[in-house]
Image (cartoon, rainbow, N blue to C red; front, side, top):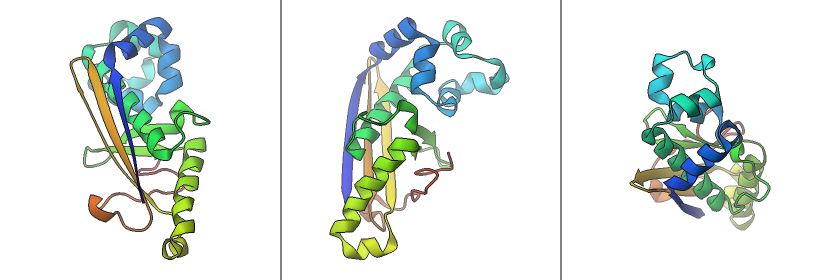
Length: 181
C-alpha cells in the first residue's frame, strides 16, 4: 500500500517565525541533527557544541540556511500527511529528516509518529493476510527542493514487504524509519 504526502512552504514565513520566536522555534521544530545539517558548513568549522540556537540565529542565519530549514519543514509536513495524522498528536521532533549515506533524504520517526506508522502499516497487514505473516514493514522515499520564495516536498510511505516500483529502500525499524535515530 502506498501513501503520499506533499507540502509547499512559503520560505519568508519560516524566516518570519525565526525572527519572531528565535531559538524557541528552532528548538521546538528541529532536532539537533537537523540543525547541524542545516548549518553544515558552520558545523565543519566551529565546534558544534559551543553554539546555541540564539548564536546561530543572530550570527549565522544565511539565506541558504533558511532554505534548508524550510525544505525540512516541508518534508516533515509531507511525512505527517503520508502518515494520515497531520500534526494531530504528533510532535514536530517526532519526525526527523535525515541524510542517508547516499546523500538522499531519509526519515526517522520517534514517539507518537512511530506509533502512527505502526497503525498505518497495521491496516495494510489486516487487509493483506500474506503481509501480516511477516509483520508490518515500511519504506520511505522523500524528496524536497527550494527555489526563490518556495520550498516543496513529497513523501511516499510504502507499507508491506518489498518496496514495489520504488526500488530498494531502507526498511523501517523500531528505532527509526531509515537510520538509527
